[in-house]
Each structure stands twice: as structure tokens, then as C-alpha cells.
Image (tube, rainbow, N blue to C red):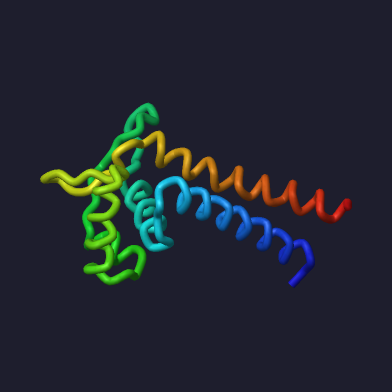
Length: 126
């Protein structure tokens, strides 16, 4: 294990924690709700011909299986996400309500890591 590997891991984890804290504060999400919301969006997004983004439904069983979280837990958390307006359910399955909000999560992940690295560099220079 090199120092570079350890510092990269620390930077990436700090970025995830930064984003998790932002979403916890902004949307009052628990860690499980955050992960389930992220997984629903990831399952929803596909690309078609000409790289057109397509939203495809997922379901509680798929999210549960993919995350290794009990189905009943996922069901309860999805109901909370629906109440908060982050997820919608229809006859086809469950979807993120606003792809833009979900995309900001993905963008925040890399920005959070970059911000954590900048802060760490400033601390080291001080």
C-alpha cells in the first residue's frame, strides 16, 4: 500500500462523505435513503440510439437485490423518497422524479472529491 493509494482513497471517501452530508442536509435523507435514491437513478438511466438518454423503470426487488438491502427496508425507504418528491411510482415501476437532481448527485460526487482534495492541500500548506 503506497502513500498515494491511501491519500487517493482518503480523498475519494471524503468526497462521498461531503456529498452525503449535502444530500442529508438538503433533502433530509438517511444513509440508506441516499444509497437507494442513487441506485434507483442508476437503474433508471440507459442510453438508446444516438446516445439519447432513456429512463427505464426499476422495482423494489431489483434495488434490494442490487444493494443487498432487505426488500422491506427498500420498500419503506422508497415510500419516504416518494413523500419527499425524489422518486415516483407508476404501473411500470419506480423512477427518480427529476433527472436533473439525480445528475447533480453524480456531478457532486466528483466535485466533492475535488473540494476535499483542495481543502486537504490547503491544510498541508498551512
